[in-house]
Image 1 (cartoon, rainbow, N blue to C red):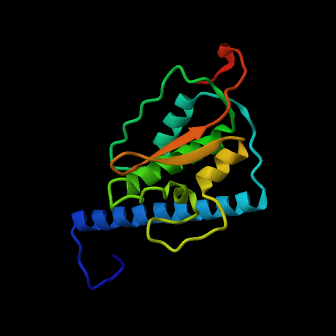
Image 2 (spheres, rainbow, N blue to C red):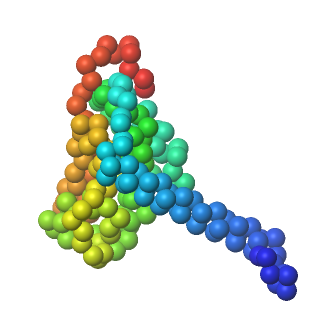
Image 3 (cartoon, rainbow, N blue to C red):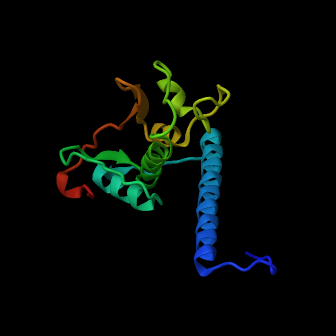
Length: 176
């Protein structure tokens, strides 16, 4: 676009700007994940826990994602509030959803029995194996005394199960 000897139509220029913006957003996300991984590795993540409803977290996580793919989620209204740091939980949920959107419909999926490898940091199927570190989503959830695991699904694919203990608070105090 900076070349003086090239003439672009307005449509081509807009397309190039959109591609540049998308790449910048991806790079920014990668940098954020690297910084978060570093904070997790050094124990610098200190969650501030308060009762949080999953509906609140999922809605905020979805609004933060920049995806052209439709995302269909169903959060059961009967789920109890959980003691969580809303920001960390939102980032963990957004990370899981973003990975599902970007990688869920491609490739052959994980081989049976390889679900645990889904939480290796910065790894995808076929990458070299690492035994150190932890994924950002897993690190955030574990920092809040929760668990996150991947389960094989029949016929291929993966189900991510995120669990936090139920909060013991009056229903009137739960932010939904």
